Length: 144
Image (cartoon, rainbow, N blue to C red; front, top):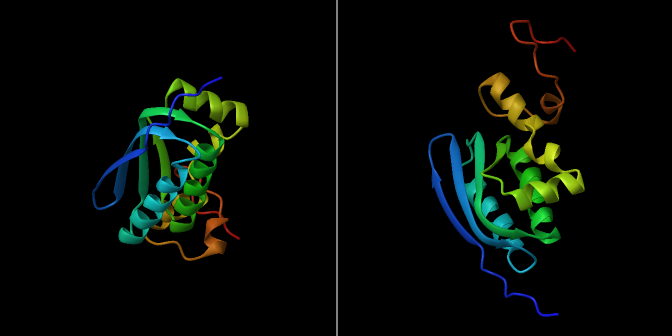
């Protein structure tokens, strides 16, 4: 059986004061997954106050287990930075791999760091703050 050659992963990004948007094209696979993680690390370092990292997945051709691992690593890094991760324009194939592996909710739910950042309106104060539950709408902050 012959396999098709991998299409290089293309990364194009733009940023605003609070968000960075990265367009992904090509294959997020074992040959290219590290490129995404490295690029996200550089973007988070260059934009320390970012609130949201938006990955536009519309142009992805395929995602393999290494690509999924890269997305999970990106989630870890955005959580640590206090930024939300958004997987915009998910393809049918990407949604399927996320559903089959049970990672869809994990990768698309707001992260604890981003929730704390939004509640305080600033940088996260540390690990203890990350564990606070969200305040009910219209109600006071929960007491410890």
